[in-house]
Length: 330
Length: 241
Image (tube, rainbow over all chains, first blue to last red; front, top):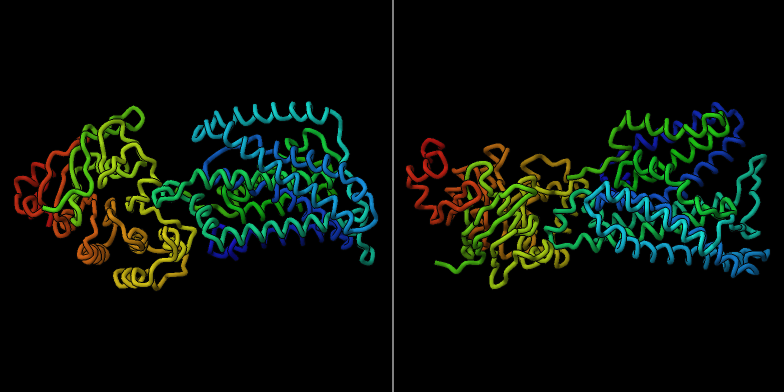
């Protein structure tokens, strides 16, 4: 299996995920509860993947530590909430097509605004601090604080509702199993984004350049390619994807606060670290694992749910210190 | 004597607080293979990297054909027709052999006759066409690195120690390939520690020491002058063989 940056098949991390799911089935006992938790875990994992895939490529390509990535998540959620409000009639209708008429513009607006903000952010905040990790951490953290205050200015400090359209509510009932519709949709969108990224990375010259740049950006430049242009493109695409993820996550929770992005950053960093920095395939595997573990542990032992993903990260790094799918870098 | 394709004049390079190149002057004649020799730490690799803009010259001029490239960005310099084979080989380990060559071909898919020539020089490239490049042996990686440099017509190829760490049989294979390449009038600037390889391939030579060129001339003269070899390189060709 080619997971985006490696050609050699390495099924062990995927087998580990399957083993975790089977172990959870044994511990939970009830198959219908297990299915519900598994779908919830997959939905959460794939939403985290959408939000974090851009960040892992940004780090892989240019060694940029962007602690303000949560900003794009937050802005995506807020823009989606505002857009849904504009299309409230379509969102409130009982027709799936009418609901799509509200959701699609909201997602599109989130993607476009987050992407444009990413372009501005790269030019103004990131570009002056290339190659300086400490300054990157400080300035992106500062940028995040300023941006959160600007969100307060534009949208106010209160919780903003982001209601799910009526046909996206409720569950599919199969026997005594209940599978929430929206979670299933999140899984489908997450898989579509992953498939799209695999196609881009493995079947196009831009994808080849991104994979090569993650390994050895100096050599890519020595071949005559302008890696900075490529990086700007990846940064904007990563920001747009974070915006999409934020919009989907906000709709999942049906409300948006200014901390929606920052609250996801811990999970996002865990995912890109255990996946292997710069590895899209690793990011996918890590996100699914994190989503599943969070949901299984939350059900089995709520008291340790908060720390379960930290423990997962520690165990994986003890096993594979460079992450699940390490990228060979020079 | 052919005209010069590349001319360095008074080139200085600083890396951090270290002053590595301290006024490098030499020229690379068009259509020839020029050897850049010298002890470890003399500044040979820095010279190649400075030509390509990977390290910026702090003073001096680097003329390639009629253009001064000393202040230009690396991609712009590479697009003038300069290929680079670094000492580390710089192959993309996660990409296949084919993908490495597709990336190196800037003008579109690699031309059939170019690929056939590469396969003739280096049969393992054809054999392992779909293999992940990171799985190749050291010698095969070097073949891939050189193949990338010749997958398209280039005006100048910069090669840094291509025989380093390779088995003698592979070195002989590379020497034969470079000898073939020379027949195509490709201009090459090569850093090499293996004096046997340097002597058999080089048309002209520049010897560096402590960040400066201390000798420049024809390789045939250096190869036959044991005293000069000893003075410049600390070896004699006879003793080395």
